[in-house]
Image 1 (cartoon, rainbow, N blue to C red):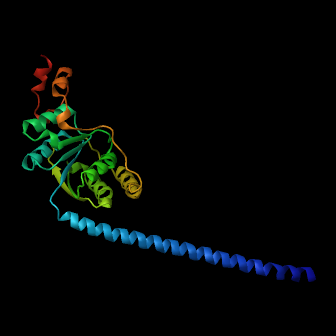
Image 2: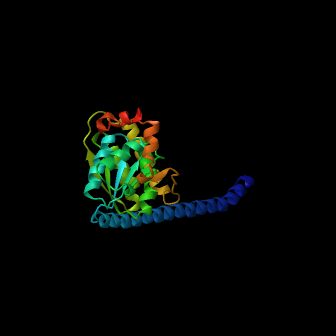
Image 3: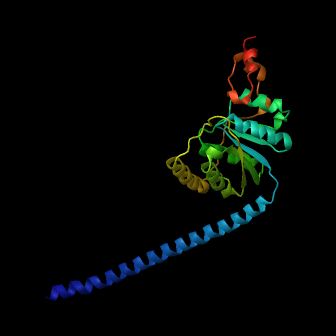
Amino acid sequence: MFNSRFNKTRTRPSQRRQQRAHRRLALAIKLALLGGCLLILSWMGINIAALRSAAAHPVEAFLVLGGSIRREIYAAELAKQQPHVPVLISQGSEDPCIWLIFQNLDVPLHQVWLEKCAESTFGNFFFSLPILQQWQVHKVKLVTSATHLPRALWLAHILLGAHGIWVEPDIAVEQGVPGNRESWGKTGLDVTRSLLWAVASYLYQPHCTDVKRLSAVNIAAAQRQGFDCEHQAGLEWNEGDRSQ
C-alpha cells in the first residue's frame, strides 16, 4: 500500500513536466503554422499586386507551345504584326520548318528562339520560365490550340503567375489533329506537380542547354539532308529541293 502511494507521488511531477512539454510543442507548432500562413498570405498579396501591374503591360513575348505547326504559323503572323516582340517556341516542329514559316512571312529571325529541352506541357513552362525571366518579361501571350486547354492555361497561370508573369492566351485555329490529348488524369497530375514546382522554382531554376536563335538554323544543310513538315504548313516545295 505504501509503495503504491509512493509511486503515484513520484510519477505525478514527471507527468506534469511531460504535459508542459507537450503544450509547449503544440504552441510552437501552432505559431509555426501561423507564421507560415502569414508568410504565404503576404507572398500572395505581393504576387497578386505584381500580376495586376503586369496585366497592364503590353505583351512582351510570345510563348508558343509545340504540338502543331499551326501554332507556329499563327505565331509568325502575330510576330509579323509586332516584329519587336520576341518569340519563344518550346519544343515545336523541325527547325527548318519553323525557319521557312517565319522566313516566308519576312519576320526577323533573330527575334525567334527555339527551346528544345521540353518533352511535355509541364516541361514547356519548366524550361521557358528561366528564359522569360532572363528577358525580364512581365506579360506573355501564350499560343496554343483549343484542344490543349484548359490544362496549358492552368499550368501557365500557376508556373508563370507564381513569378509575376501575366499570361494572355491566344488560340491557333487547327486544320487537322494536333499533338495533344487531354484527360482529367493528365491534367490533375500536371496541376499537382506545377503547384509543387511553383514553390521549388524559387530555390532552383533549370537550364536548357538546347536553346538557339532561329537565325542560327543552317537551312542549306537541312535541305541537303532532307526534312519533313506537316502537310498543312503548305511547305511542299522543299520536297523538290531534296531531290536536287
